[in-house]
Image (cartoon, rainbow, N blue to C red):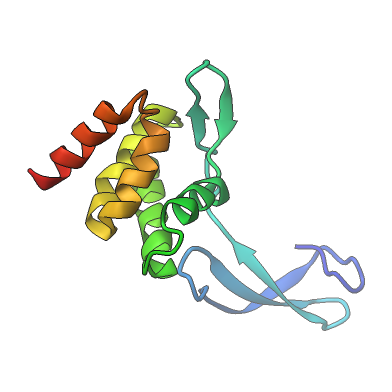
Length: 149
């Protein structure tokens, strides 16, 4: 590891521990040349998740884009931000644990709806109305009836 102060490529590890979020190893290092101490983080390289859209093009999985959709669905609802973050965390870990590198936008939407129904039913209907692209009031009414079953 190159020293940020003098550029020497030799350093020794003084302390090593998991990071606060447990997703990396935090290492305190000391340059063998100038004695400068610095911190490095060692993380497992993650393969990017890709979302395959309806028209076939692919884009990287974007937590922020999903959060924007959930925030829109939960506007003026008493849904804590931690519930939405947990929902996204759960979806992302499920996708990564599956070993797949691609997910269709339809599957992603289904995953969101499956989790959102237990968080807030109004938000579920709002999200479903965009995701399922209801063509008329009858389709919307049918979705509402299915919630009561």
